Length: 316
Image (cartoon, rainbow, N blue to C red; front, side, top):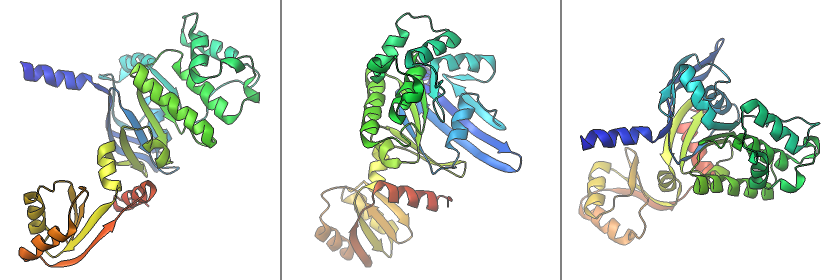
């Protein structure tokens, strides 16, 4: 009984679950069997090069396009009118924010309140205050900087006080100060309101600073999902061990209580655990009769790891 209850509880924690999603435009396959799960409270960073399929995937989630096949569950509801109803709990800014040049920030927000059925009297003032645009609410959209436009787009997405926020390349083209401000807004939404966020970008370093989980998309395929901790283990400095017998070497590492390692090929092991004494490790390997071809300290920055991942998993 308790087991079934716990299973149901875990199930209810999923905000979005995608299974086998495909999208074809004529002969072009834009999405290939995408499987993706976002849990409540996640800041999910969808990273991929330009043209990798990020925007197509986000559009499918909010029903701006119809997938060719596959399933989408939003708050445990799949398809039909019920799914469309669940979209009322979602705020999104996909591609460029849709606002009218001749209207002020306040007028744009009032317009979206009207068409979205938002009736709270203070919705506009609260949204402007949260994104830091209170003092320019009277200013026309056409006179906004790119950073201000992105903030207004976020304000529009927040009018209905969503549980789930979807943002497509929100920091693209922003200056460093605007990027920091936008990042702080996202962290506040997640930490203060418990909002689940899906954010796409081709800039991995920026996603890394906010995301708790990552999905890597390449040529329409989601090739990897990982937590931030798993990402750190893969991308940080490590000891690279090249030996003739990785199976025996792995058993030796386990016997020495070295558990943070990964066998990356038939002759190569990466050890991520800190405070490993190279001298003692070499002595033990030699004692076990394992031939050491090479041992060295290595490391990758985020972008080099991303490029290696895309290449090794079948991207360009």
